[in-house]
Length: 577
Image 1 (cartoon, rainbow, N blue to C red):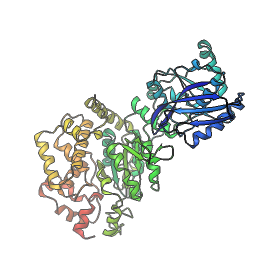
Image 2: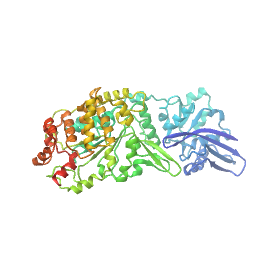
Image 3: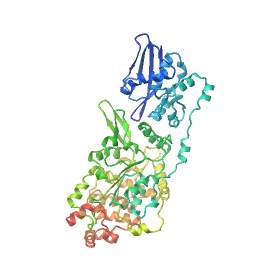
Image 4: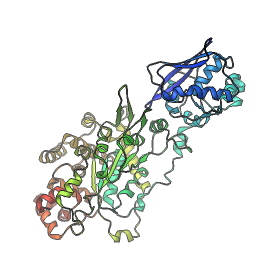
């Protein structure tokens, strides 16, 4: 006797329809499986036999052949246990073939016949809907997850007997036996709470850094913070999820799909409602960061999809590990290649990194820092240049004076900042309507040319700066994207020279950090109302100020006191450290 049951398989985050074909025939008793099956699937034969025996269904003394079609798709997971059992039960006459019309079945079996939860139910539910299935039978613990896909009747079962009872009942009895699982994604998102996320109101001072985080959140720009230990870099980073726009329903499904495949969905929620915040230790391996394995699973980069990937102590990461970030930071995806196939995982995350300015962490305070020029250069070279170039924003994080810590003045809360970020996100949504662009940082070069408009004076302003500093084309486009985000935050339809100067100031990691760049950076700091940090001895500050152009000094007199960590190369060249 022959039977067929519809099931599914997941490779990467892509789901496929699998037909489980079963045949009972005369011959030497045994169970044979064909169709590109791997070790875990081969082992399922004995598991299914024992589970059926313990559920009261003893296999007949016949030759059982199970084929998984199509044969060219690798079957490497245990989600085919339950459909195998259903196919054998049809051949035994316990289930009717027509009872499974329009039904997909997935699930793993334990030896006592219970149905255990499996990974990847959400993408399989989406595939079931695409293939016009009507009913999806899943493990009971996966039912809420599958219910996020509309247009399907989701039936959660806890055992083989429960599945058999449901399929043998008529329509009226089925509704009474197991009520289809339902979920309302929009309702869940409307109840989103930011409880448990660090608040910017708890961080004293650091107005300039908060400004950078606001711009990064509004445009989803990668950002790098450079400052001494104890300046608040990690605490500021953990405030980032609290100022990002909430996930849209589409983004929530995207992120949940990744977590479903990885088996990382939280028990209390069938779907990811908050933007992820992933902070790997600097000892993380390239494999853990990128993902992979015999059954390809998403790595930490993909688990941060649509959220934040925070890399603390950036130079301490292995160079090979950092180089893995090149493709995700540029293409927003990561490809894992194997001999027979390759898999692509999404990786559209905001990369937020923090590092010290030198090995001891206190440069350029020469009273505390004793690092030599060679030591600092070697420390900086730990981070590959192409990775540094992929950060849209770079900001110094100075030490917070004790007076700022003791002040009773109330700091701006994350909720206030998030309101401005949401307004900027709405402007971007309107601008990019009808495209696959979500944020300004997602624009490629062609999109920048199309969407970012500069008038004549602004074009000449940015041209003079980039020609003088010989900055890269990537830096040019990133600067314009940051400038557009600043304009969106300020509700401006026009990108002014003032906005461009602020955006240029955040590209201080590009070249020699000379007077034009320093001027832009100082103008940016004055715009956000932050006092310029005072580092080094007075004569050092005066020497640095004397190197500036008269125009820069006249426009921004405070530039004499600017000795931030961004000016390493210039200071070493002039002072001979």
